[in-house]
Amino acid sequence: MVSVQRFECGPVATNAYLVVNTAIHLAFVVDVPKDSASIIIDAAQAAGCKLTDIILTHSHWDHTADCSELVARTGARVSIHSQDAYRLLEPMRHTVWPLPFTIHAVVPDILLEHNTEITAAGVRLRVLHTPGHTEGGVCLVDALHERVFVGDTLFAGSVGRTDLPGGNMEVLMDSIHKHLLTLPDQYNVFPGHGLETTIAMERSTNPFLI
Image (cartoon, rainbow, N blue to C red; front, side):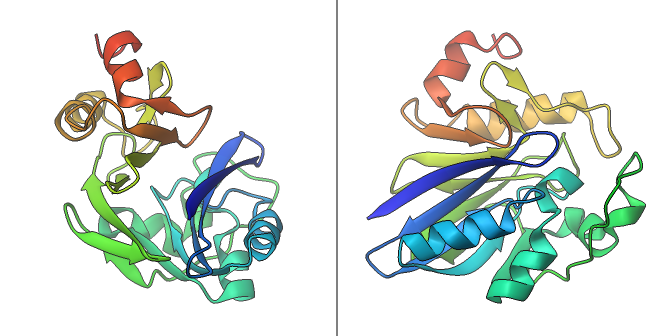
């Protein structure tokens, strides 16, 4: 059985999604906000699963702050889009505003590219490059379970902000319309902040998209 657990962590309430595959006792996590490492490890252990992968939807600090700690404690491999890797390599240079804590650099193991596939914990994920919030933002499509992890590309009733370095509203809207709204209506959407939604709900009610 493959299930998703959401943990809201860090100073700006960022979601980490732990995906556990109890059939093979493996797990992966999508995004690693501050103060999430111990929570993720405990939840994976409670499910009887070993954490093998950390997949980052983008490299803003609130999604990556505990990545180095989680790597050190689990040995999990790290995946991120090639155009967003620079923030992961030099996180404190790209925080936009000063932070009262230090984020340590991480060297990614896998550089993701559009329309390629990655398998984590036995789950096949198709990578969609969805720039606009950042240059290398990605969404991860799990077609078998009809779900998509969208980071800060799309939210329930909103879209990602584009006023930070690397952001572009026109590019973001093109990404959403071209790559997310073409998914089937029944797909569950797991955003980087806030609650789960569906493609059908956002297509019909999101004020930015109608």
